[in-house]
Length: 315
Ligand code: KG4
Ligand code: ZN
Image (cartoon, rainbow, N blue to C red; front, side, top):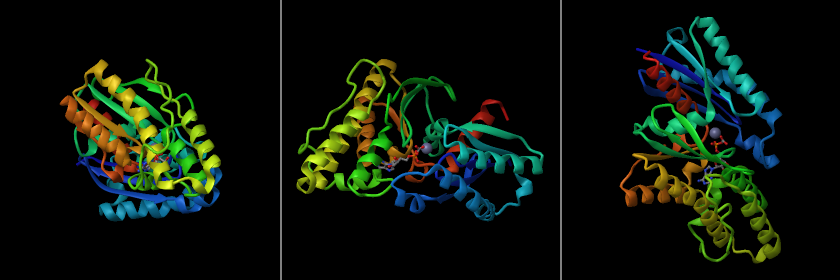
């Protein structure tokens, strides 16, 4: 039985997952949101300090929940990049210390690849696969012609979609992170009340969210208390999600994937999930979307990625 212990600490969550023979046994996540929300965003120094404070109980809880002694772990892995450098370093030190103590290999993993493979935990990928990565730090389209073959088709030129959600949520006084709150209120509003721009409608697969951000902030400042919050959230969500969906549809036409997928924190968004399911139905394409627990940062997605690399190497 192969046992993988994985650490994900790239931003404001410290998470430890244990996978036994390809199955996630535990996925403990310590969230720091309540600490950062009072500042309206993540304070990197605070994130690192809280990782130092939290890692021991997260690790102990994971081992307890998986009901295995640490000595039985065969492989350790951790998120090496991209992320906040202080946060990444804490995860790396914890992972390498465990690997050194156990005398087992320690593998470096990529956070974005982990987000993509979160969907593979429940529904195995078929190739070619197109994945839309929508997170707090990234908005990207990847083509995977085969397992672990990541080809970046396009990326954001400025803000990421989740970042845009969070900045607008902050201006509305929703606290950090506000994407889920906007999503919830959007379901109560009229999406055609306010006209907000769909940026970068060009031939590339790149994105830009600064135009939507500026137009939204201007509208909020102009209308003040006359702004209908639910209608605004619905209108904003329509523009934010359709900006990605339009480009994703274009990529589907060009690359004709067998399966499509979404990844990252914004893949929890109700509108995005519905749009992606509709695209799959309309085009008769298979779909793999992550369950909610695996959308935002978590160790399980990095463990799944580690396992795929091991399988690929025949281990
Ligand atoms: O992937 P993630 O945990 O962080 C990065 O790796 O960047 O994503 C966090 C982002 C935040 O911006 C948060 O507001 C957004 O995901 N988010 C949502 C929803 N749930 C989380 N955005 C829109 N709708 C949601 N339901
Ligand atoms: Zn992430």
